[in-house]
Picture (cartoon, rainbow, N blue to C red):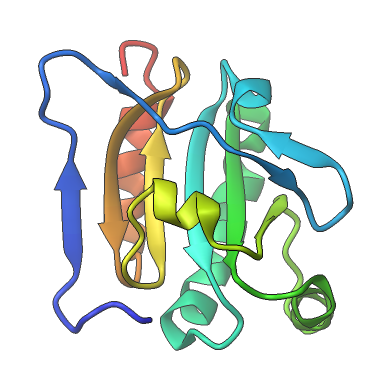
Length: 155
């Protein structure tokens, strides 16, 4: 499950904003992570796996964006796709990631979001509305564009 050579973008063009699908799962640190607990935050939900080359390539960019914007109300959630915690912990010990990691071991959350390839990134504004998604490797340019959209108060 990896993104095709041509990246896929999706924008929620509906007149009425659509709420992002709720999720409730353990984090790698053992704490529960829920969408409801993140209300008021701009959210980048990134589905990834340790075996996914593009996922690993974009991690430093996500880490940089998280560190530059976490004090401004941004949260990045790395939703790991169907891997057990020990494998993820081993990966993080070699590739430092400070944003929260959500465990989607059974794939239920990725199914709710319609993930069909990795990496898959979903952009949610401060009101919990799904603004769009990107499948494939994120670039600094497209990530900055989405960041501007989700961080604005009028979403």
